[in-house]
Length: 87
Image (tube, rainbow, N blue to C red):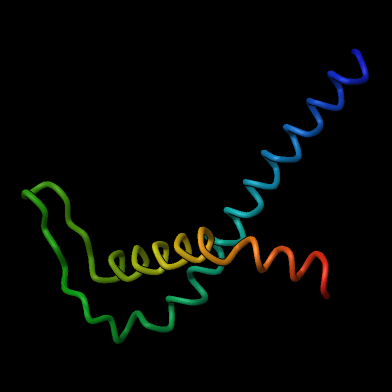
């Protein structure tokens, strides 16, 4: 294969592996962060249209996932620049 084609494939592979790695780290940390709040969850079980049952714990973890997503979109660039350049 041509060198530029090989370089392009490696770049895409690194992006995909990085995305999976980021997801794995985030999915692992959600349990560590929100797990301590399970016993004191303020939510009650929800039943939506008689089809979906969403437990209080699932709602709590959804809230944690939303908080992580907001953090990704608001602070991730600053954190990456600090870790990559200043530390």
